[in-house]
Length: 458
Picture 1 (cartoon, rainbow, N blue to C red):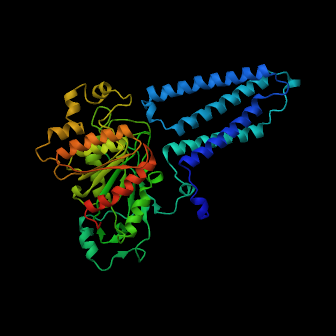
Picture 2: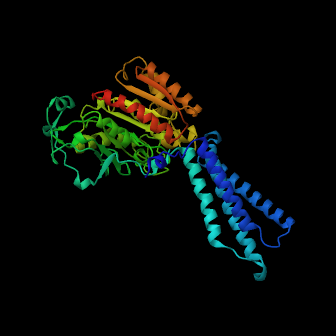
Picture 3: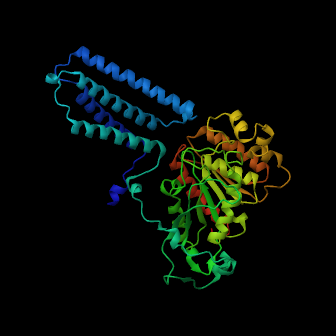
């Protein structure tokens, strides 16, 4: 793909305006194609337009109520571009249905030609611009080149991955760096790291997690193997582990780091903390699922046993976006021995059930006990341990988008509580809102700090 084409933006004000104009042109042409029949009177056309408008308003209102009430997404949290894309889609569907019904009701002799090919092309144009507007809203693909990104890692089948070698076959990162030469199966250090997809054994939690994706830098494939620190990441809701590599581009960040550090990088393990795309077990141990145990026990045991990770978990970090950020904070607040650092990108102030109700959260996940909730809620834990040094060795990063005002306020309050409890806190604001543009920039900024905390070269 030519460089000039790869750099064409798919987000931003100019892209939004272009997509809206193209979408409206396609929609107007579609309306003329489907609704303007030969011999139709002006009164009939007005009636049809009013019908389309009324049905569109009703459908859009119903969808909006479902999103705001059913999924508990605040109206102010819905990006305007997503609203525009949704309205375009609804109008196109209503127009096609109305036009087809009107065509079927006409006498055969006066129907005219339906022209399905032209109509299909116009519908496709509207739907494509709607998809592009949704992309603008959530910043999944910032430019054309991101649709086919450059290579940052190999994808390796789990069966082809070298086995674990145990403590006898590993050395510390410092000792590995002091060696003049390292042995690799292919003779030289690989240019790229590898990403492998594998299930996480859950002997302690029994949590039904989806497969994890793990990035292993080139140095991991050497003999002896360096005992590398780990960055565990989690997606939001809706979400899947693959999002951090596909939209979050963490593989690119790790690749750039290892290229300038002799093949060394933290192992990046993206794990499932929800159990499904829309699942919300509020990242706690409850009758629903033992997510805390999964993240603080099962995941570290697996990473040490299968990937020969650094057994000193104070060198590790756990982080995530949105729900994943909230979850990372919960894990470290409840089990600071499991990870020495957390990254909270756009997380909530406290764990919350899917309906947004605190009462529901306490009832369904904490046995109806407010005391049990407080005993697991990060902000309450920070206040309770403000003077006992429990979090003195913990490092925490809070990052939110500039336009994500409610989240920025939540993270500011959490950062104050964490700092008062002894956490080494960093708070940053990056351009963007509650979207992947924010989270790509967040991991880009935080990754060197994760590596430095882990004992790798800064």
